[in-house]
Image (cartoon, rainbow, N blue to C red; front, side, top):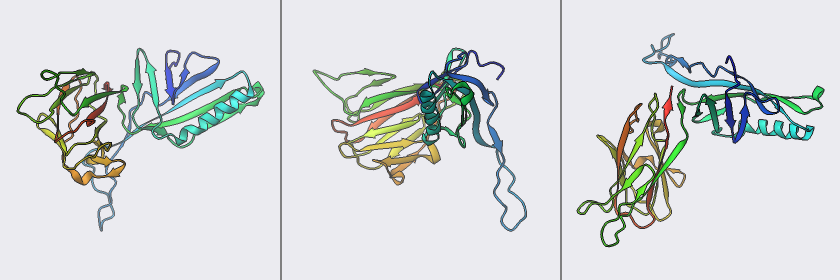
Amino acid sequence: MQSTSQVKVEIAGVTMYGDRTTGWGIIDLLDWGDGADSRGDEDLIPGVDGLFPPDAPLVNGLRFTVVGEYVTTSPQQATAGRDWLRSLSKLDPLPVRVLEGARWDALRFARVDGRVHTEIDHALGGRRVSFEIPIRTADPRKYGPLRPIEIDAVAQTSGGLRFPIVEGALDFATEGLTAFPGVFKIENPGTAEFYPERFAIRGPLAGFTITSEQATVEYDGSLGSGDVLVLTPYAGGRATLNGADVSHNLIRADWVAVQPGETRGYLFTPSDPQPGAKLTVEYPEGAWW
């Protein structure tokens, strides 16, 4: 980068500044402004000395390096800072946000790419730690922070139907329909598409569908009281129930991306929901290239 004076990086809750000479400071963000690596299909052609021609480029993800210094008031603080830097390689994912201009960009599924390089400067009395943190993220897009939507799966009545408004969603019930159809919407103010990060469904209920226009995610299986089913769009759609893979119960898994500038509506229809059942949706505030 040409200048880091207006840049901040937050890693695992620690903020590093581009205009600091003490504390956590940034010297450079190597390759931050570059695009993601791409390659062609590398599968060997059976019985032939060659490769399949690439149908489309494969994106490896974005890689960049945070180069900085931690200037402290004591050697003990420097040692503690070095130990913290070394511990970052164990975090999966690694929470990373970068501030450029007026917007924080939150990276998704970031990890340390290799090892964190650290060196204590003993010429400064052991009070300064130089470091390089190589980071890779699974997607070249930059995302806003995750936001949750929570919807009770049971309609509540008190002298008639109740219509509670929750963050980003409208809970509703209609006479003659299922016990609780729930509608919610997700907005993408960014410049790149994204998928809802995860759907978490808590029982008890006997199954459900989540529809958006012509796309449907349908799960055919019961959830007991306290059971939590987590759905993610990755690898073609995965379902885990209390940590166990139950993807075989996904009858349909039509995942639809929320396009740039789009507000997409969803309908959650549970089957025989009981008190305590609910849906929680997590999605980024936006995605930008």
